[in-house]
Length: 446
Ligand code: IFM
Image 1 (tube, helix red, strand yellow):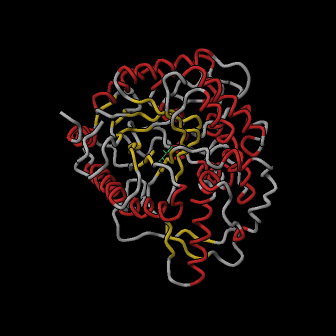
Image 2 (cartoon, helix red, strand yellow):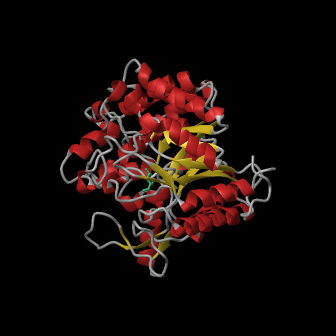
Image 3 (cartoon, helix red, strand yellow):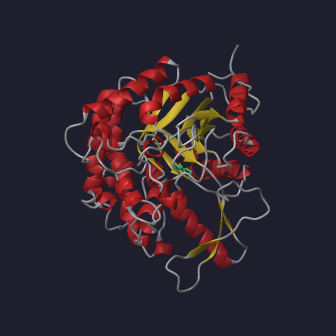
């Protein structure tokens, strides 16, 4: 519990955490019966990931998890967001669970609780078992049922201790980069034909939610990647394009969850009330199933009209005149306030409490990271400003605890409060880790 007046004017009980994901940190991809995931396959394909990097070893968290829990305890966080690798639990995506896989997360959950850290698992952070991809992946409706079955196995083992679950991580990004553009696993380039992959992820969440509730869940979240969208100019064309992009990036995956319906998709040539992949009853399962919204925020987006013959009705523009991260992403902390207050204005009473489930930046490799400190200070202040404006925001998870495997960028982007030497596995807390420890410690009761 934090005190009512942290340096950032955050609410009493505000929860501090850090976040990671299984494929990005665990390594040990062939150990203890783990089956291959789409990311193992993708990494093995030449040219997919920068310099041929893979998650085969990553941070070796599978063996060094106790050290990582000690780092969390020393940091003083209230919560830890990690993800469960589906193919450790069900190596082929279906059938009897693999006890060794469940044991790994069971030990992790116990160790976190022993240190007073709330375990906050994500069930799906992009590493679909390859066997399910071979049957159509998230384009196949049956994958949603498989996901609920997997959730049931995990909840049966961990549900006595885990109270907050995040079912999906960034389903929009997974659909867009994995199924529409092909820059992430599983590497499909379907453009707008990727939409069923979004719906089936939501359906998987909708089927899993009652299973998690039956196992004692108190909070069920989806962590959505959201971005405030601005038109590049005041022209009618740019404003229409910005609205279309906002619909796709933000509302496609949030309206069904909070309002029980898809947004108007006419800009994409679809009647959102008659989508061929949506079956009767689906939206009843999906709508109203959240008891919290996870918000992953990195930067705003500027949008201009697309070329008349382009497949998409928008072009992504450049944000200039602001600092940039090592990834060349613009740093706009006030965009987070805009985003949160915009959610409040749009969803009104349908908006549940919010947790910032990811926020952070990549910096140069060194241990001294003033850019990360400035980034975090600015963004946490932006959360405080949203709280002051009436938004019910309850927690903040830094992405990430450790430098890790940054998907198609391999190990070239470093997001960690803790530096990782990928040759030896050695962890070294950065200046930002010490800064955060002091600041969140400052907000705790004596
Ligand atoms: O590393 C990713 C994470 O897996 C999902 N959200 C964005 C992060 C930074 O790109």
